[in-house]
Image (cartoon, rainbow, N blue to C red; front, top):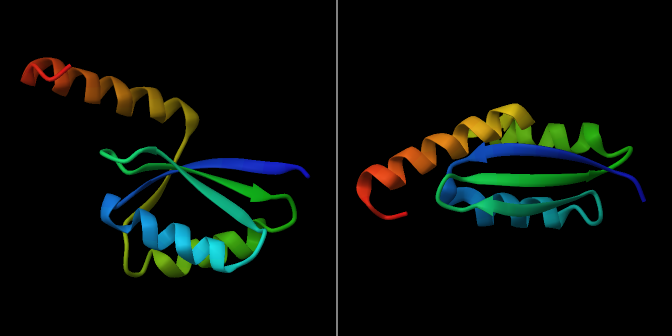
Length: 91
């Protein structure tokens, strides 16, 4: 089964809720948390279900912050996190 991978930055308090909503629609998408502190998630969408997932996410955006993140933007997000951690001495 072919899947389409997309990355999103979401309100970290909403990760479980978004995951449960997607799971309620059997076999269309799987949400994996990549970085819970930053709210980075990966959504693997079954080919042919892209429109349904987009509709669900569009509806959820009314109540929660959900922004698609391009692959190249992930590197910038993590670089920023590393700088913040090194400045605070938590690295």
